[in-house]
Amino acid sequence: MFDQSNLIYRYDGSFDGLLCCIFESYDKKEIPTEIILPDTSQTLLFAAKEIRTDVKKANRVLTSIPKKMGNDALNFIQRAFLTCAAKKELYILLFLRLGYRHGRSVMGMLTDDAVHPLFKAVKHLDNESHLLKGFVRFSIFSNVLVAEIEPKNCVLPLMAQHFRERYPEERFLIYDKTHGMALVYQPYQSAIIPIEDLELPEPDEQEQSYRALWRLFYDTIEIQGRHNPNCRMSHMPKRYWKYMTEFGTPHKETPLKLEDTAKFLIP
Image (cartoon, rainbow, N blue to C red):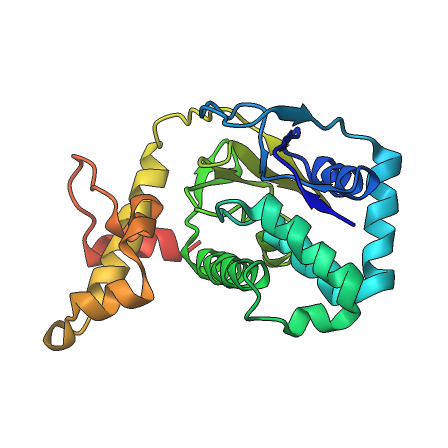
């Protein structure tokens, strides 16, 4: 029998750490009122219980999930953990409690107060990662393709395979400014690493010219008679424009003209 406790779990923010919170909840037969990160500065009404990350405990929980409720449930909570949803950790705990009780059918319990917010959050995550696969704009710095993004969700793990397959022979870096991490890749090797801040040098003349070329292409293909800002923002939300070359502020140099593009297109 589980009791709603007046405890708050504090964990290290890792997925293994969250699984240890699940283990602790079952081991102590208690349900926390909240699960928070170490740097949470809000005033706490209840005592905070520190949950240490133990790989063995985390693995016991991890292996039990597909056995009890299927691989789809495991994949679902892994993606739910990447979302920006408020109280996602507590909802994942409650979701798993339902899954241990009801098995695979938990994935169909969309009206449950714990399940519904997670499905909504995962849908937002999937949509954002899909959009960014098309909205990422690279610049070249020292022969490395570099891009910056500010997503709401932690989308890099979902974007990694797409860009590895798209640029298999290149070296690139995609910096997630929101979460302080970056996807780094060199041929056939990739990793997601923490980066607190990324300072890029000023673009050189060639990079500026390529940016101007892209803006010229973007402006040229538009049909002026069908200009529809509202439609554009529905397909390309404005919050992504900051790092998109076609919406960037042109440099002070003379704008690129159509007749100047040949030197970039002809080897």
